Image (cartoon, rainbow, N blue to C red; front, side):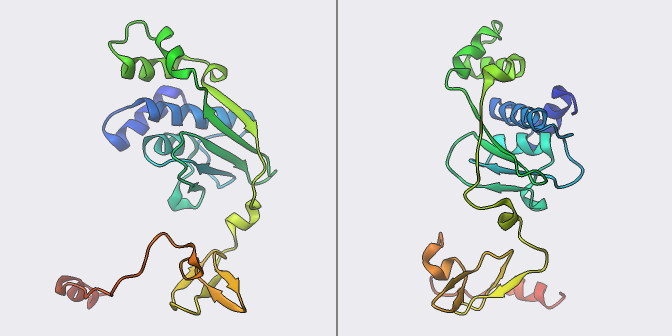
Amino acid sequence: MLPLQTLLETSSQLHRHLCPRQVLGVRMGMCAGEILNLDLPQENKRLYTIMETDGCAADGVSTATNCWVGRRTMRVEDYGKVAATFVDTKTGEAIRLVPRSDARCLARDFAPEAKNKWEAQLLGYQRMSSEMLFSVHPVQLRVPIEQILSRAGVKAICDICGEEVMNEREVIRDDMTLCRSCAGEGYYLMMAERVLPSTCLRFASFV
């Protein structure tokens, strides 16, 4: 495990500043590595992380663990919580970490020189023990980790919209293969198709 300050410097470069939630994310990832006995930031894809919010905390976790959405080692389930579940894909062990409800208040005791609450959290979260900072609970995923990870090269075509669906995310209903949107689980409503600007058409001609 890299030193805390090294990880915080790396995380801050993503945002051009360091904030309390980045510290929480980094500490959360470090704590998960200790509990699961994994060498982090990982060089492989053994650890899988499910974040319950996006933003600064997620980048902090990514910095500490090397789990990223783009590497398919992190998923964001937006519950609006600075919390995360860490899954050892080799053993199936999963733990969920969330900051303790009194962590903000306790942070002041560890940063007496802080000028305000924000600075107290920024400094205090770096100095508090993991036991003071986080609640840790073993959890069981509702969807098996093997199903979340899926298999390389698996694709399907939606029978309604004709769009490609990867990673076994299709829905089978009434003998039809559907994407989640056409199955009624989408986050958007389809409107009239837009005409691409001429600049996009010119660019496409070179692809």
